[in-house]
Image 1 (cartoon, rainbow over the protein chains, first blue to last red):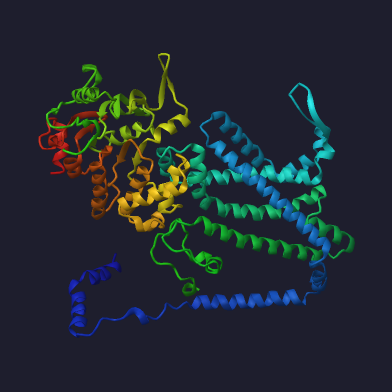
Image 2: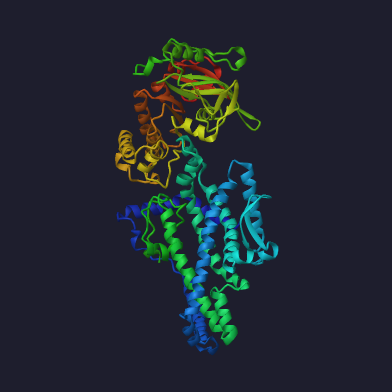
Length: 340
Length: 297
């Protein structure tokens, strides 16, 4: 209190303030112009940059001088055909798993929010089961399906069957991987989509109800397009997770990127350089996804702000500096060049 | 109140009296106000546009509507007044079945809303059938509820094209006409968030009109607006009154009720307190109505 007191009296003293105001006013000059104001100094920032520069130099030195990296080997395998095949398998698995996951996930999410209690229970049970069991276990399970069901047949329950086949012929490692990843992904996507649907103002549903839209139409035309703004960012993370999770298929001997490099270094013992090849390719693929995601986000942000849409590069490079579209309602468009 | 109305169902015209509505339905099957409306429409040989009888609604243990009777003739404009929490909005939302009433009945143009009678029993309608009934009832919300991901034009043609299956070109032409009418023809390509609140509400009115409703419901259309934007929305609504549209309006704009309404209805605690021509505003008979109006004078 003792220290605060003099300050308080100083602030509360109206005469001092008014005298100053009067002084500047009576001088007859124009008031100060803030246009030329000096920016706030950030000395710690410069210190941080210096520390990072030293660490960066150290890392470069380590990368280039340590012979165990065997960069020539990395280079020779980086564009090898067999690696390319592994990459294609990885991409194929990711795309199929995500398509299954998104389509099934939307259906399950809608089912979980349905008025029908039977549908809600079934969809809830699906999410509970497939989110609860590790995806690695699911993969191995599908792979070993023939141990549980030697034959799979299609027909009337307890009645005649129309077609049947050996489980081992039907569920190849690729099919096992697609089933395992797709069904698992659907459970996660269902929760993401449900979160998005819940994020849309209930007034939107009311307005479409009042206009005489059916529930399906209101969902497709009004609610889902708005929910996409909440759905796309976590889905982007899901795609990246899925891309990396495909490396689990090495346990069921499917030649994706990781399994391919493993099978090579098991022969040649060039473990580190081949792992680097895999790392670099995973990074390339996730970077492409990252850029793709920002395109999609920009599309679904239309109408969400009062601003005109930004150019793509401004968006991609300075994404973190622009306020989130949902919250931003200011009239001024933040200039990314200035903030950089 | 001399304006062209169909069938001359001028129910709330002076002379029909300011009957105080029985608070609970036990005192008589028809309230005075309802009776006049019923006889007026009987004379013209048509059911009233809106006919509500004993509408009850509870949310949990809270009884929001305790038996509402109301008749609105074709072309009539009825303004619902009352303190917040009196059940005005809930009643309005029962009319197009956004809320399902727990008891009583609501008919729009003679059709029972949300239910059907079959062999002496009443059944719930399927959601799809309720959807069909709502197409003829327009609604304007307090918070506009425009579709933010669509342009103004897309908002207006969404239901005519998607629900009524009108050709897109025809719907667009009519949408431009409606936007011109609400004074926003140059905003057709804007997104709702680029508009002021008053402009958004005018778009919402155009969107509701695009379905060519028989009955329009307004749920506090000016309550979310800055004072200087209220006028433009009320002006648009007055324009609809001049056209003879049947309207039920929940509002706190006493001045609008005075000049545009055929009849004002006071509600409090889930009941109709008093109902009559706008002149009731100057000499309310119910003490609670008097207390409510005192705050606006």
